[in-house]
Length: 213
Image (cartoon, rainbow, N blue to C red; front, side, top):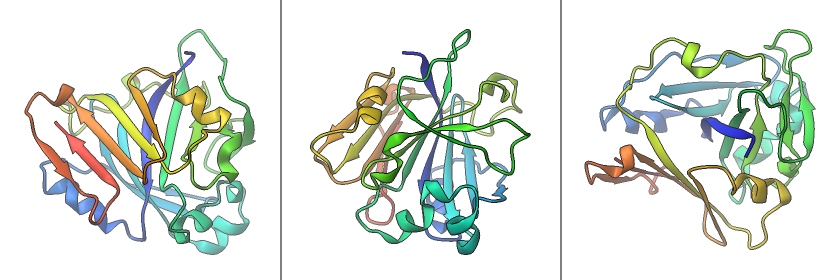
C-alpha cells in the first residue's frame, strides 16, 4: 500500500464540546485552528503517531460556497445518516501513488499549487471522507512534540452502514492496521498501545467513538 494514516477527524456540532470527554480520560488537548475557505474549525489531540481532530462548521456560508464546498460538511453535519468521519492519509516516502480515484481540493490555507486528493466517494455521505495530503507538507516526525507521546495508535476499526463498499473504501481496507466493518452503524474504534492496559471507554451515547488502551 502506497499510503499511511496521518490523522482522523470526527465532525461534531459547534463548538465540539464532545472533545471534553477525552480530557476526562487524561488526554491533553493541543492547539486548535480554523480553515479559511472551508468554513470549519477544530479541537485537536496530538498523539504519538496520529492526531484526533474534532471538526465543526463555524461559518455555514463559507462551508457551502467556498472552495471546500465539495467536502459537503454542512450536509454531513445535519444528515443523521451521514458518516461523521474523515481519514487523512499521506503517501509513503519515495512514492506519489494514490490507490484510489478522486478530485483535487486546493484550500485557501495551503500555499499555491498544493492540493488534497479527495476520494471519489465524497458524495457518498454514508461513507467517511478519504483524503490524501500533498507530499510537500511536513512529515509528522518533523512537527512539534506531541502532548500525548505515550498514546500510540495500533489499530483503527471503522464501521459503515453500507453493505457494498465504494472502490475508495475498498482501497482503504488494504491499509495497515485499518479494519472496516460494513453493514454496521457508524462507529470509530481506536486501539492504543495494543490495548495493553485492558481499559475500554465507550463514548457512543454522545459521540460515535470507542477507545481501547
